[in-house]
Image 1 (cartoon, rainbow, N blue to C red):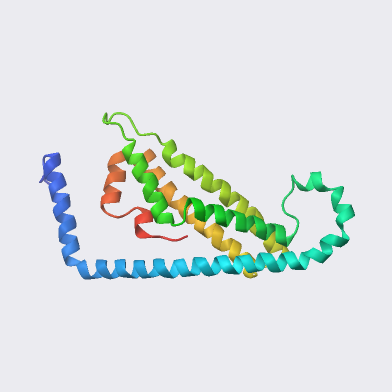
Image 2 (image 1 turned 90 degrees about the vertical axis):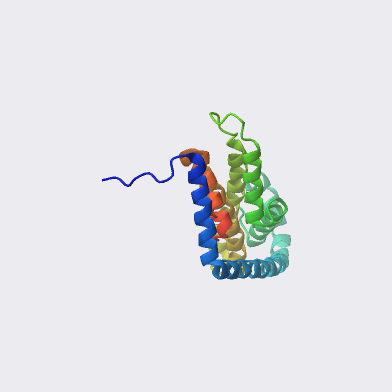
Length: 223
């Protein structure tokens, strides 16, 4: 026998959901506040680690460039005849790989800086684009365009990271590139999470997930 319907109107259902969330917060207030404090603490730690990573990567690039300088001077003649071919190929030396990773990192931080803030801004832009007529959807390209941009950066990072692995194995240089790729994977996962809900669950599921704090970017999940 099916359970009887308790809340028969949308307003009653909404009020019941709000009361449920309010009750949950009251029961778990200390744990929720503790988790928020820990998240703020981890964010500041990540900022320090990001600055350290930037310094270490710059040092690695400078070191590799100095190491490669003497070799390049002795091979200038042979390299001149191969310039046109190199433009279309993958980076063929460690300094070039590190330079690419540093360029991607700089572009990444200029565009994104913080994954959660970046994705929240995109979600807000999507919500503002929603028409008053609920029968039509908002422009999904607001989510898919930054997804494509992040994917391009990630593809370039992976190619350079694979070459770094070939040159010097799992080294500090490889870990530096891996930090960039994990950052980009995290942003991409946040956006894909929202895209999936929009395409397959619709606005109601997206709204419910956001109100419950269940979106990946709200949880601060890292890849």
